[in-house]
Image 1: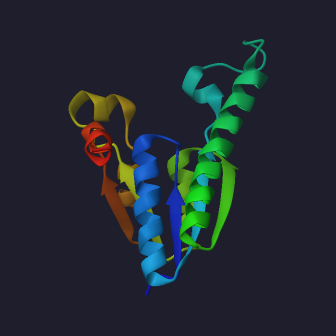
Image 2 (image 1 turned 90 degrees about the vertical axis):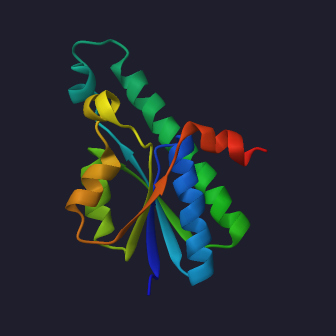
Length: 153
């Protein structure tokens, strides 16, 4: 069945819920996981570059550190559950990086923030793009902000 699961994360609560669900599935299946954090280029999103912003390099380093922290949290969870893992921080547009890495795995497990309406239109959805374009199966873990409140009770 599924022997290798790709678990993308952006460090958000929603993504971490997807990571937890993916780890539970991997544990049940005896599968390996690969955590992935896509370090998106800042320039196109912010219309900035090293020549226009004196602290551009610091912004890049902050983004890199956020990615490493997200991967660190995910790997700690895997260690606690005894699930074999690898972790990757790769540069590029998130959906593209996930789709490229998905080729090496049997299943992708990722969360959806569940945005609708104008939020979905303005913010886009990495999960939606991956679901639309991936030839591999995708397990989408829904997330609503109230989920974290319910889980803490």
